[in-house]
Length: 364
Image (cartoon, rainbow, N blue to C red; front, side, top):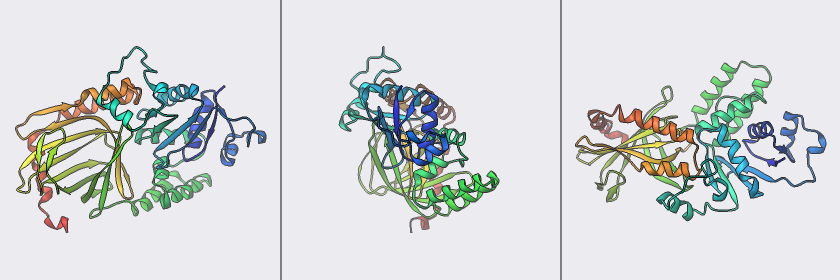
């Protein structure tokens, strides 16, 4: 029997998952011991666990360390339950585990993995939006849990404390709808709103994280979760994917809906000439107090002014699947998103987004 020690904001949900999978929980925290009715003798324990599980520093997932022989088991369990989890770390534990017949070529993604030191003594498992929601559901089978619990906990600070208060109210018998409505109202006062500048955190499957720079929120409706971001371009170069010249003074207009699996960035010159659209395919977009965040799924769609539309880097998504970094379900979800986008693109609509530049005061 595999033994696991768990700590962090995902402890309750993971304890439930691992118990249901036949694992033994070693040295549970006091709250976990109470929730699951563990005997007192299991509180500390003299036997060292096979695996140690704890939060990542950014609370966007977990780190698993310990006996590498058991890594594949924990990956297998979590992959079967969480659609969009990203599995990084000991390559031997994940490479080809689900598809041992696949021969992985030396792709650009593989090179990125080596450069980021992914091949190591631990596993890094990221929990994007879909995974957090599923973990909410699992936690709720153990103890009253608000919708969005793990997302709120990942926010940290005051929002995390608000969740504790809300869930205490649930345990005391307060109506769920009223509690969650009050929680959303209070959280919304902390989250970014129209006029704010926020960063765009672009996490890669291989583990690197890039900040795309500050963007001004020129429109945001919390009700429909739609956000329009404007960025000014201050350097020359070439736009990735589009291979179009990037000039100082250009504008980037990003249209985002919180929770969506893609978003569009349209590029215009300082003279408002349309240069093209880059459509990013990603895990659900999450909004945090100072940023938006998602995991980029490597493949994207480009639209050019002449009407040409093309999917790019399709092989990178397949490489991620072959390497065991993502599940087949996430690959299929992404492919459906791509198909829907390709069937609905309108060049006229892409050009018309220039109207977001009409209010020059938005840059003040």
